Image 1 (cartoon, rainbow, N blue to C red):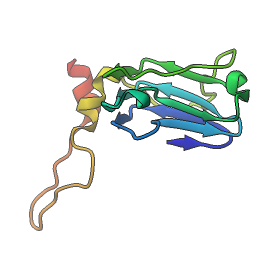
Image 2 (image 1 turned 90 degrees about the vertical axis):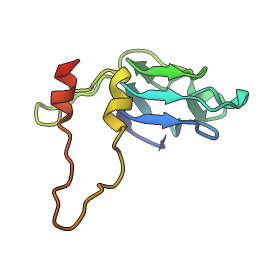
Image 3 (image 1 turned 45 degrees about the horizontal axis):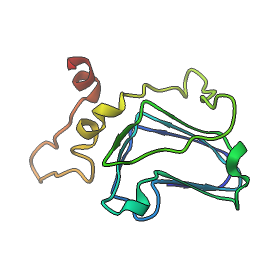
Image 4 (image 1 turned 180 degrees about the horizontal axis):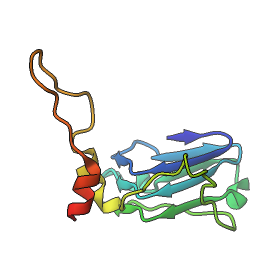
Length: 132
């Protein structure tokens, strides 16, 4: 995922074995990574989740990680000062699940496997969440 300008709130995503980075940015974006699941590739030079392209002027960019899960040596480089929590209205807000739940949340991700004459499978993730 790459952000050029503005604000991005990444929530409950799974990032597996990226080539260069999982979360990238340029032109001073604000990024809040919350409840994501990062599995680094085997290559030692690509363990860092973040990539900031700005020639060293990125130290003041607000990038935060909260409740993320890091596997296989993955790590997130935070930067900037102050918080970057979203200022959502009540209608815009949503529940972010713990990062440890992402494998279950994404286990059936992708196109639905539906067949003519049969119902498509549906999983209620809120029911799944409250069973934990």
